[in-house]
Image (cartoon, rainbow, N blue to C red; front, side):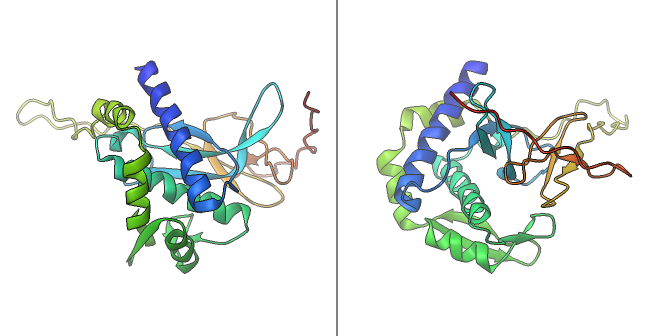
Length: 232
């Protein structure tokens, strides 16, 4: 399974590079691609994490992160590519200081719609989440058909399917709700960017060079500035 995840990650990275050149003139920084189940965000096919929260242990370089959910790999290649482009819009807006969401990043506003439709997507509006529903426009769909490695995409979405709810109880037996691990919220004490993660994780804000702190802790002191390490 790990080999399949690695191949999926490599293909998503390759697609990011292609889309970056075609729709952003190569201007977006390369993020870390994370493949992770969406247990905490049931309807999300992926998400962008604001703040450069991944660090290369050797060079000290900090990276943004784009997460793609494997539950949706059972859908068509166009859906996976639309998800990648959707998260690239968030990355573009973040580094250009464009406020494209509100309501804890759930509601996608008119700025997101404009940026999405300028960069290969069609955006549809809903009352709950704004312009969050996106799909490839004709140019992007043609580009995907011409450039996607079909055998690699077949490998990716041929191995994952969204599973139905478990129902292995006997007749009349009440299903017990599954316990979910609570994710903690961390916040940059200066710019107030937030990320979620496990307990005791250490995350550095790439913009302020400060360590994120527990957003729910009371009386937490601001940590010292993160000292940059010179890369070779």
